[in-house]
Image (cartoon, rainbow, N blue to C red; front, side, top):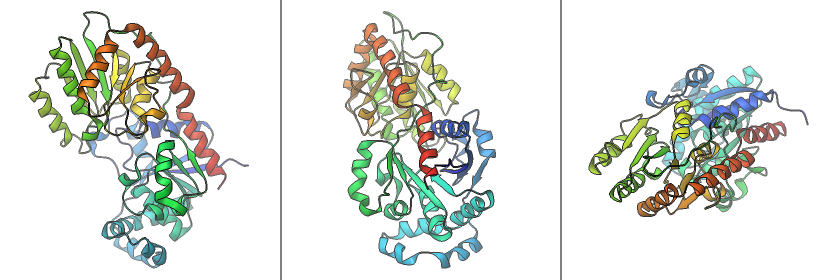
Length: 398
């Protein structure tokens, strides 16, 4: 089977603060000799553009969002009205279709000009709608990835999935959830393909050192600032630990979706309310080099998500041999085995989280064991090259 030579790669609002995974996968695809042509819906808010590679990524990305009335009018006669009407899902669906039509036309034109026969949409939201319309109206082949609960990606999912040549889904749990919801719209080829990380880059140059008696416990969290990421639960756990007499310092890397004017302010107020000004720092959106440096400094990585499809942030910490405490939520169990390569606590349980932090902080042998086992799990199962290999193999079969 001949290998595909060019691949369209469509990511919404690229490059955002959480898009390191996509950038590393793109590099792995290109290392394999496949040219990647980057597309996105629109640039992210300025406050979320944080990486050293962000500017170069933006310069090579074609942004598809368009308000061109002429492009919309030229696309309307091509609409597959029969298929769309069968969806019958209401105003939000039709609004998404109309917004996506000019972008779908532009995507098809750009792909035709560049000799691209296949586009992978790394989302089941508007990016997937654009790709689905480009297929129905202009014959462009596409595939999609599901990174979280189907309900998070808007209406019209059966329309988006039905035209895809193949799909990747990051966990077995998500696949089992979508099967009855999509039914016959699920593509014949579905691959369980987790996100991955660059384990060569995320590798310690000095051995991990567990916390020592009397030393300030250094905790690190990296996640966008959002209620469901459980940041407030971690703040409450830190307050509990301080009240027990433990000296704790927490740094949180990440920003809210508004670039700093949203949930960031809620967390600022909570830090003040709990009296944690001298113990907690909100770092905002930071480059990957800063995240890596903070992981190398940390005694423990803590992320208390209420729901987490899988968790690239956990992978990054584990790759850097930092013991991880997470929550038994969503698909995290497909990454972390409790007590073996990380610790899992129930979501929305600050006291259980504080107990887990305290127990690990007082058990250096356990910390060292989790450090080694966590790194081994990510190297064996969650390298960035696996996703690249999957996309190349499956797109080459189209």
